[in-house]
Image: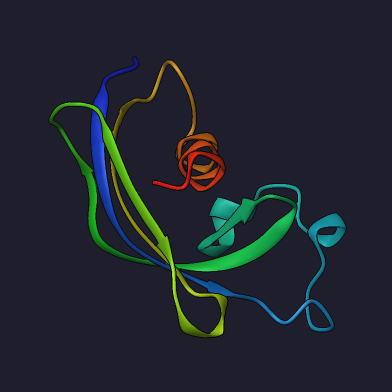
Length: 90
């Protein structure tokens, strides 16, 4: 069943020489996310907490993406929320 969930954490870029997107069918099973066709290791501070919609996403040093999102998971995945926020410059 779909619901609103809140997530906060960091996405660390994965060395593409070590692991490729094609090698992994379900990235989340390995603690990874695919954002804009790049793989990232996920470090959650908050995962799946129920609240309202928002997305605070920044790209920092070494390409690390920090995120704090709240979204309806029946309307889109966390990857889609992060990608949309990066496109908007949130």
